[in-house]
Length: 170
Image (cartoon, rainbow, N blue to C red; front, side, top):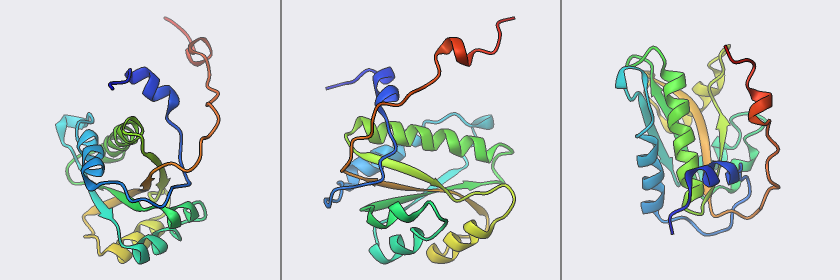
């Protein structure tokens, strides 16, 4: 059953609790494929992803920063990377890709939550993840994304109305 994209956008939530089952890799690859359709500066497509299934590595990733603890129970973690040599807007490009990945995850009945690794003032968290996964220095580590079957149902999100969001019309 195909769902309306606006409905998917409106109902997507950050899911930090997952059931025990591991999603089929076909579904995970579809989420990554969706990410690859993101817009990017000069169509540079600077993103790459690491699919982490190893429970020990996931445990270490859950210690990346104070808000990473939920990753410990994630059946799968996707690490989003950006090649800063490919684009002068690698952070924005990769962020667009992550958003499409999150939307496709929700559309497939999975739950996901991204967790920032990149920090504008320090690369300490990036170095931590880079060491765990042996990631080449040419990649910037943008985020860890926990994915699994949802084991929680967050309340509907309260958002600004379009009237509140539009600062002015000129």
